[in-house]
Image (cartoon, rainbow, N blue to C red; front, side, top):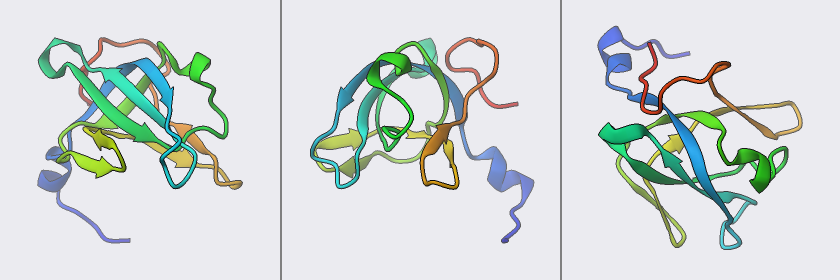
Length: 112
C-alpha cells in the first residue's frame, strides 16, 4: 500500500449529500443508476453514476445520505456527466455497500 502525506488527504473533498433523484441508466456497461445528490447551498446539486443496483432499489435510495468526493473533475460516463464520486465498499459477492453517516448531518458537511 502506498502512503500519502496529510496534505494529499486534505485535498480530497469528502462531503455528505442526500440523494434526491434516481433513474435507471440502461446505457451503462454494468448495471447502474443515475443519481442527483443535494450537497447543500455551497455546492448544490451534483449528478453521478453509481453501480449500486445489486442491493439498492431506486425507491430506497431517495432521501438517503451518502459520502461523495465532490472535487474531482467531471467525468463523462456514456451520456452522463458525472460531477461527483459516490463512495462505497465492495462485499465479497461484488455488490457495493454505500459509505454513509449513521446519523443525519447537514448536506454539504465535510468529512472531519
